[in-house]
Image (tube, rainbow, N blue to C red; front, side, top):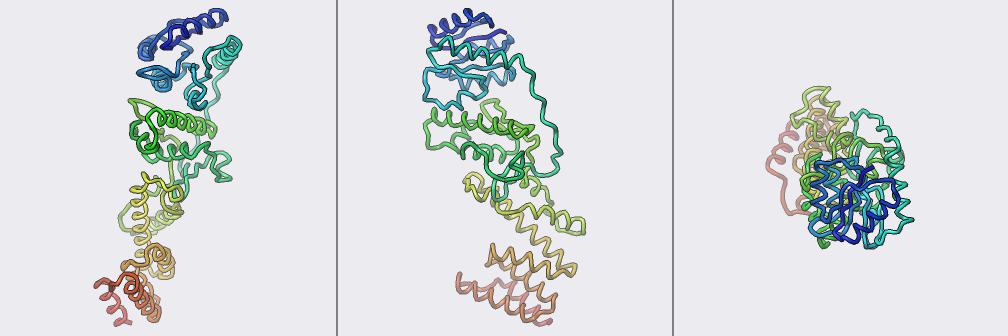
Length: 377
């Protein structure tokens, strides 16, 4: 086993090198006092282990670990730190273990035992591939991954709410790279840069750990100072919903497809979480939902299904009681049922609601529709 040591304090490097020599299980290939120098070495030389100081100038250990993983995901990382104030989860980002300065021989021996077990053990079998023809994550109303015990219970298993929000945020971008600075500004705007970075690294670690526990063939990747959530196995109900054509529904097959997709819409996008960054997509998806209900309603009316149309319209009316378009569709449905009483009642109630709440009258098109339908009845 070969290792390199990276620490900006030369006495700490010498102490660690001496401990390694005394133990005799691994060899030191090189030592460096800057993360950049260590990364330059790793880009051309294979090693098994990197002992990496957390608190270094220019590039700290957590940032260096991200770049190390880009060079070689099989490298084991052991963090070394003089401070116990950092979150342990942050130390465990990409890491096999961590050591507190000054490093004691007994604790160091346990770390080497862990390294031996890691390098000597067999890699776990990859998770069996699933058929991803159904949503793997629900995002309408509440964020709910459908993996493991979550599929049965639907309960939230996230360690922190910020880890959950970061997962939702990366999922929101559908596999696109998101610059680190944008993530920090969006999710941790109130924190100083160093503190925000620690929270980001902690949350990334928690997401990776959670995805691994669920057996999901996906992870959070880092590159070019950006992050992305690999989309393999991460199809959401919102993704499926967006695939529906915005063209009018013309056939029974198209109607059945629209019905099945409409059933996915259990509430607005991430409604219960109230993430401000999700608002534009939330509005867009809701508008598509309204358009889809209108399209199905018009198809039902064209094919003599007035009762089905009225059921759909009742849902829309609760969401937007001031919609002239919904009022007109209601009147067409009642006219089809030849129920002049309900037609008149609905229009008059709508007229009174607009006057009482908004101080306006129905649109000219709605008035004209009412007169035409009542004169024909």
